[in-house]
Image (spheres, rainbow, N blue to C red):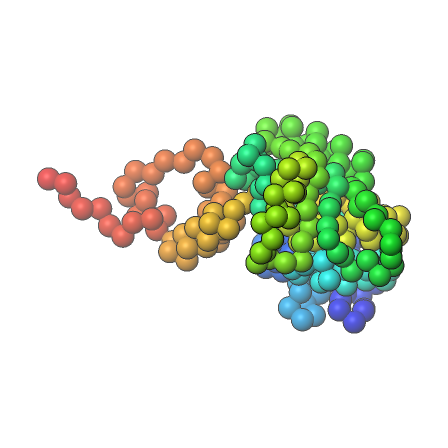
Length: 253
């Protein structure tokens, strides 16, 4: 047990998946893990441990931004000996070839500042993913037929950005997408000699809002709706009523 994680020794698996949203951790554990059990809920940050295809896995929220992630990753590594940490989440696309729901595998993570800046001082450290994880993720993504991009991303602690000049330079230099956590994850993995990777799904703010509105309207989880719209899906009028897209079918006669 630590200041921020209430799990007992042995409750955290060597492999930890880290979405930002604790409710997304709950959803992923309930839908993908076998025998998932709650191991942490301190300050509402949920963590679950179970098995995936027989392998022990923990899914634990990181919160939003690098300072929050830094707290949890430090404690997961130092106090629970986590060996492999994979950020799973969303990002905003910054290149024209990156489409909505494309997968981005972050080879490197650029940033203006991270919680590790005070340690590095004048050094411009280059945070990067573990090559073994990255190459395995590339092969897995190809086998699933997902449209995948591999390259650099930008980690920012500012969501409401007012730096169009900075975004222009990121785009100019090939940055694939922007998110808020990966650079510090890679810093900490390098410091502690652990493996890390960020696997991201590309979204826009408008797409996120549309999913939230649709979720509230039909009464289904965002993840279920996103899964449904990620493949061709057609409704007859009565199926649309059952799904919650329309209220009723009017007789056209």
